[in-house]
Amino acid sequence: MALYFILGLTLGRLSLRFSEPPAQSDEDFSVTLPMEAPTDSKYSMPTSDLSGSFNAFRSTCQLAIIKGQLYKDLYSPAAEDRPLSQVIASVGVLDEKLQEWKRSIPPEYQPEKAVADGHRSKISPVLLLLHYSYFHCVIAIHRRVVARGLSTGTDLLEKDDFTSSPASLSNPRVLLSTSLCTKAARASINLTKYLSQDNTPLFG
Image 1: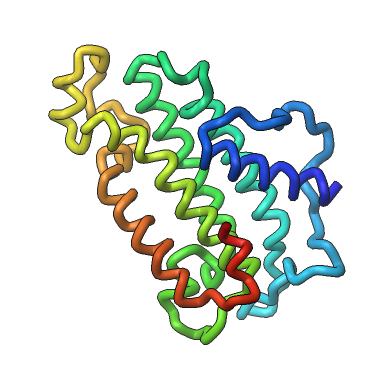
Image 2: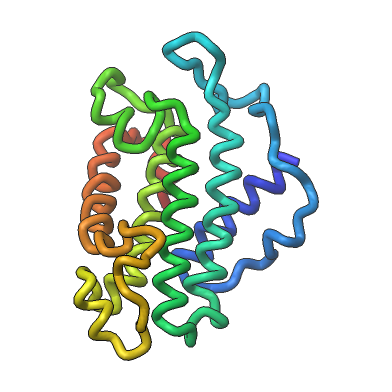
């Protein structure tokens, strides 16, 4: 079962990077999300409150599922001709799913938080990859809005194929897409300082 989700994560990364359809759809997998981290890996991390541990493997699998939906809704051939209003709606939904995923992680291991606290001189390769994947998702989601040249509510109203009021947006973060992409790109670059020669291939 673990192999299926690792494969899914890899395919999701490749699909987003090259804008090519995955070799296998998420719907083809019938297994459920793993509840426990593999015992022979470093995916299980202790939490500071000692109430349990953080299952980074499960979080990685959940992020892979979001990536699959991201490709399907924003980058697949079927998504190319979608009206702007539908693209905006998908960006808002996907961003909320990603933020919900982030909130499900213990604060000390959340992207931006763990690095900003500076309480680790070295971050594990597993956590680095998880953070890098998160920032990549932020950029992949919001660049669909940035590519349309939209950054304010007025920009939305000026588009002929977007007739709804900006106030009706379910996720107002859509109007911050340019800033969110910039911050995510800078955060990704900042992660490189924690890389060692041993785990650099993980980011290839």
